[in-house]
Length: 118
Image (cartoon, rainbow, N blue to C red; front, side, top):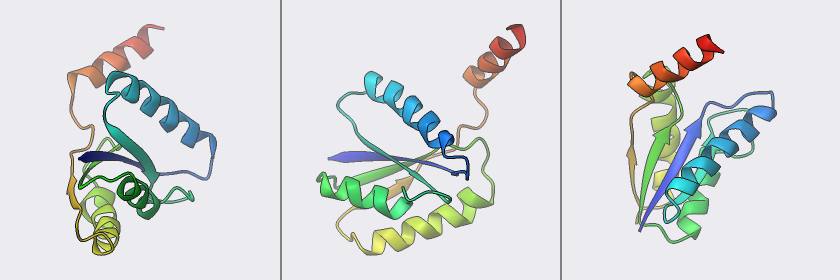
């Protein structure tokens, strides 16, 4: 069974967690059969380790990390893979793979156009 862990950067401003929770609620409404958790790289007690652990407790055998980041920067090249590797060592029966950042996508351009026109 596959699980999804959406990872965001995190912020000292705690209301940012509610923003990701809202986005994930929309995603879950579109994919109701997918087991999904979220985590934050820093500034939150909702750590990557806790996210992996929560998915493991729900019985997943495979986790896809979905980064809620725009760019493939140092956090996605180094920091998050290191965090995930540490977690993976504690769950040898779970395959963990990393997805791509949001990156270049026509839908993001549409959002910017929408914001400009408001």
